[in-house]
Structures are given as C-alpha cells and as structure tokens.
Amino acid sequence: MSKDRDEVARVLGELATLTEIDEGSPNAFRVRAYQNAQRAVEGLGEDLSGMSAGDLAEVKGIGKSIAARIREYLDEGTIAKLEQLREKHPKGKLALLKIPGLGPKSVQLLDDELDVTDLEGLAAALEDGRVAELPGMGAKTVENIERAIAQLGLTSKDQRVPIGTALPVAERILRVLRDVPGVADLAYAGSLRRFREDIGDIDVLVASEDGAPVHAAFLAMDEVERTIGSGDTKTSVVTRDGVQVDLRVVPPDSFGAALVYFTGSKAHNIRLRQRAIARGLLLNEYGLVRKPIEDEDAGDEPEQDVASELASGDLEVVASASEREVYAALDLPYIAPELREDDGEIEDADGPGLPDLPTVADLRGDLHDHTDLSGDGRESLEDLVEAVAARGLSYLAITDHAEDLRMNGVSREAMLEQRRALRELEQRRGDIRLFHGAELNIGADGSLDYDAAFLAGFDWLVASVHSHFSRPVEAQTARVIAAIRHPSVTAIGHLTGRKLGRRPGIELDVEQVLDAAAETGTAIEINAALARLDAPATVIREGARRGVTFVISTDAHAIDELDRARFGVAQARRGRLDKARIANTWELDRFEAWIDGIRG
Ligand code: DGT
Ligand code: CA
Ligand code: CA
Ligand code: ZN
Figure 1 (tube, protein in one colour):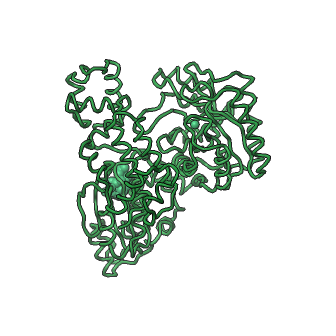
Figure 2 (spheres, helix red, strand yellow):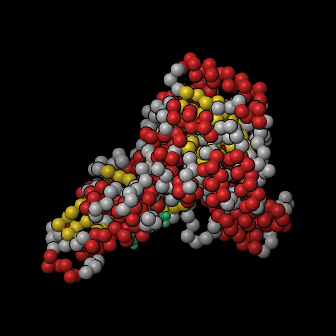
Figure 3 (spheres, protein in one colour):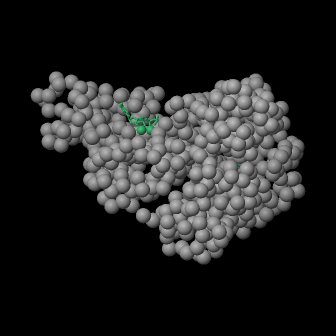
C-alpha cells in the first residue's frame, strides 16, 4: 500500500526524536535536519509515490540523504536506519524524554548508569535514591522530576494521552481508511470527538458493508505496533505513540446511531436512552427502534437480541443513518459532540436552548501571529499576510515577541521598522487590515516589556506568561490582573501557560481574573495550539457566565499552523462559548470600535 505524506511526516518526526536521544542533544544537526524535512514534507501534496529521491532532494528543507531515506520508506515500507534506532532506544526512553527536566543526555545517563529505560524503572530509581547519586542530578532536579511524574500521572495504570498526541494519530488513520473500497463514511468518536484534553483511547468508526478490507488496511499501517484483537466488527491495537485505537466497522444505514453511541459520553448516552424509553423507543448502537406492542413489557433486552431482531426485521427503525435524525426523534436539537457530557446540555437543549457555537467559518481575524522577526517564527511578514488573506480573513495582528523574552525578543528599533513595513504592505495590498502588535511577557511582578509610551503606540497587545510558573496562587493572580488592567493590553495570551501532558499551568484564582477581564474588557485568548488549548474549557465556560470577551488565536509561527484555528474553535465549543462573545467573529468595523473602547 502506498504511504502518504502524513505517514512519511510521522516517520521523520520519529527519526528526529530517536536521533535526539542517540546524539544526546535536541540541537544536533541531524535532529534539526529531520525536523526541517518533516515540515517540508507536510507542505507537499498528499501522494508522494511519484517523487524520486532526486525530486525530493530538490524540495527546500530536504537534503540528499534524507531524500534517499524517504524514498526507501516509500519503496520498502520502512527504513533500515529507523529500525536500527528503534532497536537501540526502546520506547520507554522516548517516554522519559517527555518529562520536563530530562533531556537526552540525562536519559542516556539513566540508561548507562542505572539501566533505567522506562517510567517504571525511573520511579523505582527515584524511590531508592539512586537517581540523586548520579552526577549532575541535584536535589532540585530530582524534586522537579518527581513533581512532574506526580502531576502528570505518568506512571498510573490507566495512562491517558494528551489530545495533541491522539488527534494526529486519528487523522492519519482516517486518511488511510477513507480510500479503502466500500467505505461510505468514517469518523473518530469517543472522547477525542468530544474534544477532551486527555484521551484514554481513540475510537474510530467506519461505515461499510464489507469490514474485512478496512480491518486489513488498518493493521497494515506502519504506526500500528501491536494488535490487541481483531474480529469481524472490531480491531484494537496500540500505536507507536503508545495510544490504543479501537476500530469498529458498522453498516452504513446505522452509522448515525453508532456515532451517537461511540461518541458518548457514557453519561450523555444514558440520558438519551432514558428519553428513548419514555417515548416507547429503544436506543442502542444499531439504531433508535420502536418495540412491537406485544413486546412492550419485555423490559431491557440484551443488545444481541436487539441486533438479531433488527436483522429479522421485527423492529421498526425510527432513526439510525444520521445523528441529527436520532436527536430529532428524541425531540432534541442536534447536540454538538463537545457538549455531550451530561452536565446540563440536555436540559439546555430541552429548555432555554444551546449556545450559538462558533465554527471556523465565523472567524474574521487572527490576533496572535509571529513572523521571522521572532527567533522562533519561520515566515516573512509578506508570506504570512498572504497566507492569512488567502484563508479569507479580513484582519490580522502581527505579534512578535517583545524584548524581555530572553531567547528571541525584538528591540524597539526593529519593532518600529516592522511597523513601517506593515503599514506599507497594508496599503499596497488593500485587502486585509493589519494591526501592529506584540506579544509581551508578564514579569513575575506583573510588569511588562518596554514602557507605557512605547506600548501606547501599538494597535494590539497580547500579554502572556512565559516564565515563573511555580509561584503561589496569590502572586500569579495579582500578576495576571496587573496585565489585564494595563491600559494598552488588549488580550491575555495562553492564560495558564500550560503544556498539555508536559507542564501544568500557573495556579490562578480564576474568578478574580475573569472578573477583572470582564470589568476592563481585556480579551482572554483561546490559544489554538493543541499542546496548549489555553484558556482551559472550564475557564472559558466560567468566563462566558461572567461576561468576558474572548478571542480565538492560532499563535502561528509558521503558515501551516494557521490551520489550527479549528482546534481553537473546538476548544471554544467545549467551553460552551456563544460566538457573540468571541471578538474575532465580528466585522472589522465593530472589532475596531471595540478595541478603541477597551484601550486607554
Ligand atoms: P476515553 O477513551 O476514556 O477517553 O473516553 P471515551 O468516552 O472515549 O470512552 P470509551 O473509549 O470507553 O468508549 C467510547 C464511547 O462508547 C463512550 O464515550 C460511550 C460508549 N460506551 C462505551 N461503553 C459504554 C457502555 O457501557 N454504555 C454506554 N451507554 N456507552 C458506552
Ligand atoms: Ca475512547
Ligand atoms: Ca474505546
Ligand atoms: Zn506567541
């Protein structure tokens, strides 16, 4: 089977990580080369099979030797070097690398000195003090590692993965399966479709009359590492990323009912079943059915019986092909997956109504974007603006890192020069409003970069926490509120600073912060990066109640990251945010009038 672009990109990412451990540095030339090649491949067409090693080497970002490895992968289905690295560095070591404070050198040290190659081994070695005895492992480092393991629940039995790990896996699977002959429809379901930030396992649902080729194509995927079980209707595997995936194939005419069932949540499903019963109906993964009169007192029947009765045509199917039909037959409007947790959505649907949730098409601007003026940005101003305009947006704020960011902040002179270039570009193009902004760093004491007069010269200012993550809650709250109250700050970027699965956010008195934002009008950003999804959904929900204005921003450092707007939208939906509360769904005129109102 041909390997498509996404699979090649994944393999290059795996090579980068393995090489990082192998060479003992995330900055090694080879690691960077694989990462650059991965980015480059992500920008290519879906089907790479027609590209020779020579063609590939001509792509910017792909060198000769990596081009040959990509070709080897396309031809052989694997790469000798990859197999060799996989052998040398078992998966447990990759998991160790994810712990904040453990770089590739310490991971190798743990292996060489203590034979520690996985989380369990590390936990044991921490316990009996062997880690603390290693050179360069001070008490502070050991403490940080212990805290990270405890906070992230890394060694717990029912290990969950962050959505940023699970979602790309699910999307690659869908891309492979959608081309299998006979497949009428497909989707991921479960907690991933509900957009939970941590995922137990991925549930994939495929509609087809013929399951066998679907299961076969799935098992043939390179990233499937281990098969747990495979039958006519269900296959369960574990992928190389350590995520379990359950694949189910259902007949096309019961796809809607199956999607409702396997999207869950379980609690939401129970409420739906109760509604069904109250209407003389039964709901299961095959459909919503009316029981024949004579069977009415039979009570709860095991599902197998319903399935066989369905097959024999004894039951009248009320709804099964689409989710909308199922909800309608239960006298409910369609309930978005992000809401299906049984914490009020059924009551709202039945009574006052559900929030008017945003979609990607509602977004008119992007308000947190980096160019190559930021050390970590990759695009020129012109290219970035072109890409944003091509996506149909009518306004954009350029927010490169302000001077206090140690690694890559921008000086005043460079900021002013960028402002001139931006105004000139805006004039020249005439198709998009450009706001000149910056991403400020909120200091430990709530202070910001530059000075008040210089800050007043910007059109749009995002202030974010990039340092001092573990201070007491009072200090963090005061710090963020100081930024909210600053007259020139228009939005607070990635509110908690969390990195899902890697770093918990700062501790905040959320209610105080939201009340300050509601009072000043300063927007709270919904950062669309899958690794962040910050503000958290619970905070968004509380903010919506308190009259806070939000913005959805991609925080793009590269053009392909503009596409993650859809994750920011899903996060807003998860937070039950009415689109009227999201400032960048507003027309330019209204948006500009609003900025004028909150500044000064
Ligand atoms: P996870 O995987 O722990 O992140 O969470 P889910 O919600 O994806 O749970 P999972 O994978 O166990 O099952 C997927 C969906 O299938 C779940 O959301 C609802 C449905 N489901 C599974 N088992 C049951 C059950 O015993 N009763 C009901 N009503 N639904 C179930
Ligand atoms: Ca699941
Ligand atoms: Ca499952
Ligand atoms: Zn940023």
